[in-house]
Image (cartoon, rainbow, N blue to C red; front, side, top):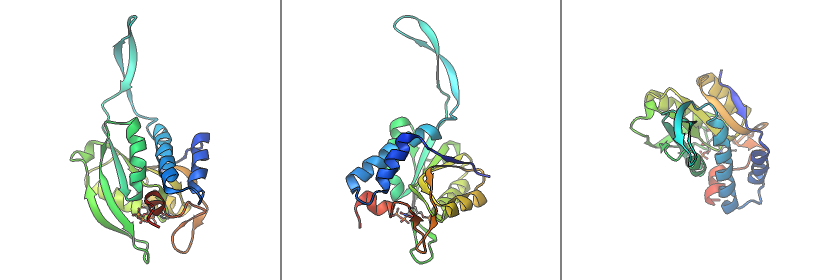
Length: 209
Ligand code: PRP
Ligand code: URA
């Protein structure tokens, strides 16, 4: 069953509280999502394998470590996942970025796909699927199904907030996918919004409401 990692680092929790605040406007919201994504990426990449290398300092030669040949792919779910891309890229600048466009039908809450562009070698990469919100889990589950159909076998899911319903769905449909989140909230309301949540992540990022 997928492990759920809740990132409880004080900086992440402090910034998450500012993100939740309804008085935080789009500029600060974007900057905070970017910062939290960078901090969370530090935890998500904790198990990256290292190899020993020689390095010449100005004084002498010594042994050091570099990340061993792992190719990373960052997969934002459009559109709110876009807000998390740059923070992660600052830590892993060589990662390739693949986009999956999904929106939730407001009536059925089922994901509808409208765009997909992935790195050609997606099946060889360690993938991090990113979306600020894991609500019913429909969007993330569909994106992961799609990636698996394209041959991907190493996938992690990173979100800012997760509802128990979304976690259960990922654990049921994708027990091999580890989930990283800054908080597990109480539940969903009748419109599929996370309670207490942060509202509509896409609208708050891009100022569309
Ligand atoms: C939001 C969010 C997730 C999805 C989560 O996107 O960014 O993709 O809802 O809900 P789920 O877990 O129930 O699928 P939305 O559909 O609002 O589209 P947007 O990012 O374009 O605003
Ligand atoms: N999508 C959002 O943007 N917010 C929620 O609370 C649930 C889904």
